[in-house]
Amino acid sequence: MTGRICLAASGGGHIRQLLDLRDVWRDHDVFFVTEPTALGDSIAAEYPTHFVDHFAWGQARLGRWRTMIASAFGNIRKAARIIRRERPRIIVTTGAGSMAPLLLLGRLTGARIILIDSFARFHSPSLFARLAGWLADVRIAQSAASAAKWPGALMFDPFVRLTTPRPAKDKLLFATVGATLAFPRLVDWVEQAHKEGLTPPHVIVQVGDGGRAPKGLESHEGLPFSRIGAIQDQADIVICHGGTGSIITALQRGCHVIVIPREFERGEHYDNHQSEIAEAFQNHGLLQVARDYPAFVAALAAIPARTPHLASTNPQALADWLRGYIREHDQ
Image 1: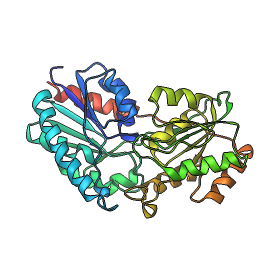
Image 2: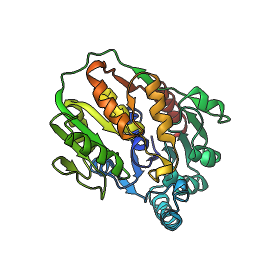
Image 3: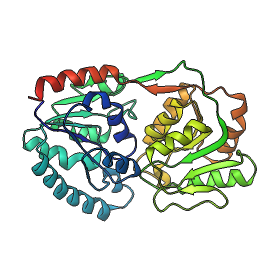
């Protein structure tokens, strides 16, 4: 294989989906483009990696026009340097907004683009997919409902329930706000529940960059992805935001999961897609969702009577298709 392959994704669940496809690209000449998160740093320790600034269309909805515009122009300059230096033949991306300049410039220089829409979009394609889809040679949705609303898209649904026994667990609660944004409401609720004696004695909280450290609890702004996995191997309970990466990582390890979705109305995210994600998993009976503190307390109280179920994503069908596409076009 002679051409370089660019693996491009923003932080959190987006970049984790590309890591799940490791068997596709491990033997190729690859480089990553992602955002500067703890997971991004872990990737950079193993593979050539370029960082771009976090950028999302929804920043404007929260009144962050200046930040959005500055990040957009900064990423155009960075994308130009990356494309000029690396000259990728194929770009595989799972979005989102921060990857837009890279896709545009990659398209202009002849790269083939495979756009895989987020696993988080169960009912319809993401805004990024709708806006950037025209740049892609191949569009891939990960649910039938989303594919039906995205003309020309292929569909590969990776969701699977696991039948493996639940591993032994410690009396440990792990709370994580994800890789990109702080989430004070989640941290406040965990701190309050601990004060009220509603949590296990041992609590670890990942609070995000600049997040407040809860009193009396072990806390970290960020943690390497490997460390998060090791903690969840032990944790009986995981409290997380509504990001697919955080949810799937906990479900893979058989944790009791309570999701507190970020809400646009509270200024916590750019839209309410985390509620859509959380509801979809809840409808499968895999987790509980808490939108206010009483519901959070009730979810904690319900855990002893619940049986946790293991679930994961299996991208084998998508991986097989990607291998064939790369074999055909990376020449």
